Length: 371
Image (tube, rainbow, N blue to C red; front, side):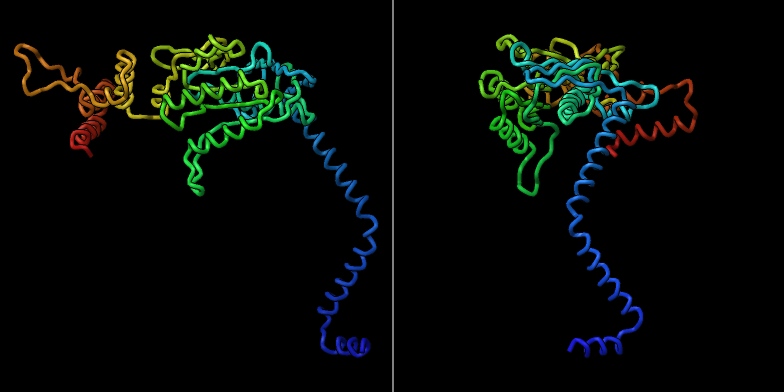
């Protein structure tokens, strides 16, 4: 039968088909012959992969001025002039990354409560600390002047805000699920990083939950992990007075002529301002909205009222002006008039061309018509 099949194959198959069949047979014979060498090939591949990894560590460390960390069995994390390994490589030419010190232990400074304005660098500080610990424990040099890393068993992070629509989970639900996972698995050897925990719910709920979580990490013997906690809840700065291992820090800024300069330097002490309105202005928010937000902020700070009490502008009744009192267009609190006022005050009359003046007048007309 085999002979008949071969003869049949010779008759019906062309040259190309015969070549393909021959190649397949040769390949199968080659695989069978190499079968005994597969373990050696796998060992070589593993060694080459290790060499490639170590070479990458060495080149990155040499090119970016990394230093050899000290790894020990303590519960101390002491980073001097630490930097973010990714951000520092993406800075514009001539700009240097601002390094910062981080010191955490389980005896004197277990929790660093970090406040400061938006965009000041709080999240970058948390991320760079996690990356330095991770790099140190996988055997790489780290971006710092010096680093002492007491062995960490787990790195827990609650950073960023996002919902999970597919499971019907809100942003706050995702926050709480991740925070619960941290608290249920944390140990004194862990490193915990919380960034803006509680912002997905109301202010008082958020403060209460954040306070209770930090208190648990401080007081519970099985959960006394080294912790960085970045927050805009300035009320949490009060915890330093009642808990000996909680220390307040802030990422500093400098305010000059109403403008905020981000210094990105971590300093002892809490911060009482978030400068969120300044960030909105930098983002291109219309000037009238920025000014109105400042007015509302001042009112809330003065009378400590809720948002509902400051929800509407205090517009004067224009129907019955007092006799002998001249109403000033530049003192009205009506949002539309305020926007027109800002448009006019922002004009550089001395350098305005006739066409630009007409265009600006048309813009003001659109504001009045609500277009």
